Image (cartoon, rainbow, N blue to C red; front, side):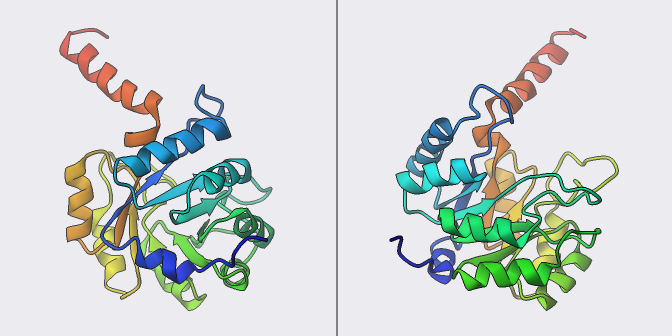
Length: 232
């Protein structure tokens, strides 16, 4: 029998540290639980204090390989809504069963298949913490009223309109003023940007593509070299 989840203890070890999101490009050559677990262990070896893992199979593989704090999530489309990060309480329960210490879910104010309160209740029932992936400061007000434990800037720039290039440090600073733990996430591509997030008030910083999505990082360098060389 697995030991009970203690989300509060997990949070204590993440303050002022880096969390690495090990989410390979879907359908890419690194998209397998075995490789995700290897990426996770490599990130820990490099100094990551926690991980963000998508999908039950990936989560189980990583949980079996390490005891560092894990943020778990499930990405899935549901009819009638644009909410696709952990949309249902059943998803939350399944992630906790698979070993997540913290469960992340879309907590924007878009039409949703289940209320945020129900997602929070499912996490807390298992001893896990509830992390609200947000797009704007107004989302945080509603999420805190629903009882979330952590605010994330995860969805800033991803709910419509043109996607910015830089991370949303202004949102991180606004979220920090609520006095709740804030996980800065979204488009952090350099160590300098991660340090700026901490200076803006973030509790910790989540970095994904810049560390674990080889296709994306290769594309950034390839585009820069091609442009510098005058190639179309």
